[in-house]
Length: 300
Image (cartoon, rainbow, N blue to C red; front, side, top):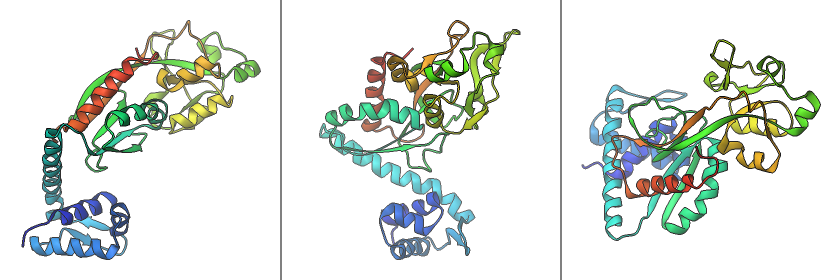
């Protein structure tokens, strides 16, 4: 018997979600159907792909070896479908995009209506993850990442840079005073990240010329949470301009220590899996974002 695509889809959904129940929820199918399709695939391959225990499913050695092949088959089918659609001159199908919550809310979401007007047959699925993720495992076609990339399996296109600034609400500064030196700054309420700690290196230099690493008095793993805390007058924080530009323009936040802030920015990059076929949908979104971001007043 020949392997069918729905069997591969079910197998990878179980691998990615960790359970038949979660896979069934993702695929919108009964658990019994998911179990039946997995069993049928294992029967055709004459080997167990998953090891069932009372609490979880683990890949067997054979299953682990089969995962990249299964993904490759589904990617090739999707790429073939995309090419046929593209020959008709109309983009369509699914495009899954991931970005950290602040960039998603403050940049991507306002740009989506224009893209949808240009490509109404493209179905967008948007997700937010604060850290780097495995694009294949999460079934993400395109991600926007802020900062330097270390994953060699990803292809990237630089979309621009966003400058870093120190900010606080006028209310906080009125109550606690405005620092004029780094020594005064570190005695203030400082809003920082619980992870990664590298985000707590602010665009300042100490007397020895080293970048200043602050010790937050209030931490969060979410940049959006920290921004809301700053708006509520809970302390001083450091953000990229794309995150706070509108609040600075409206006066809800003001820049702190601008004369001591060194020119520092973080790259904004569109990334996708290097070894997968680059569909016209990905190219269209990357090109659209590159053009749209060039029009943003905060881009450096």
